[in-house]
Amino acid sequence: MELRPLLLSFLFVPLALCSSGPALDWSSLYRAGISSQDRSPRKAEVFMEAKKSKRDVITVSDRGTAHLPADQPEESPVPAKDDTELPTCLLCVCLTGSVYCEEVVPDMTSVPPLPKETAYLYARYNKIAKITNKDFADILTLKRIDLTGNVISEIEDGAFSKLTMLEELSLAENKLLKLPILPTKLTSFNANHNRLRTKGVKANAFKRLTRLAYLYLADNQLEAVPQIPESVRILHLQNNNITAITDETFCKGNSTRYLRTSMDEIRMDGNPVVLAHYPNSFVCLRSLPVGRYY
Image 1 (cartoon, rainbow, N blue to C red):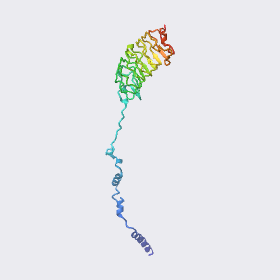
Image 2 (cartoon, helix red, strand yellow):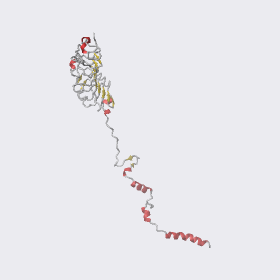
Image 3 (cartoon, rainbow, N blue to C red):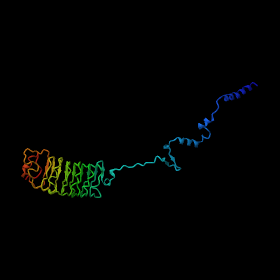
Image 4 (spheres, rainbow, N blue to C red):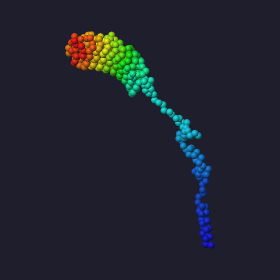
């Protein structure tokens, strides 16, 4: 009998507490998304996908292939055009600013198209026969051209006229009968081993070349020494057909005080001229030319 009041207290006290508390707000629970229907896995995924930005959504097809969204098309990289893609660079070696076309197979019979900003061209020992005005017209950055060992017999007069930066030019071991107009900034010119005669070299061919230091005209058929600029240090005229010189060839005949201090070497060996017959021709030089004296 004493247990009955105790049991009744356990039953009625929780009911009294519940009735005295605040009423449960089912609408707020619905808005919070905790209703039993909103707890399904499929709708949770839809709810989360809706919060994602369109840029972050990547759809996957049934085969597992990923597709980018419409506003982000896949961009393939566009390869930059390179001068090394020229046909010339398939036959020659093209480095930054330099082109090497030596003993090209199959035979190279003309000057090839050059990459822009080429500064140094080495096209030695090929079968180039002619140099035209168009060959170097667009390559104004050239500083050195070496065409040694070709079969060049003709060079159009304006072939090098636009090359205002050209400093070194070699036309050695070709078949030239005359020289073209040369750029005024040349410091070295080599036309050894050609077929040059005096009539093919204008009297003033080198006059305007005030920076020319090295002039090589050996192994040709010259009958006279051309006018040599004051700047020349090394002059090679050996193995020509020079038969005579004058007091004006290297010095100024009317001036005994004139000294040609810049001239270091003159070679005239292998010519018919007997240098001892012209003693006044060398009074301005620091050393006598190499050649025949008896």
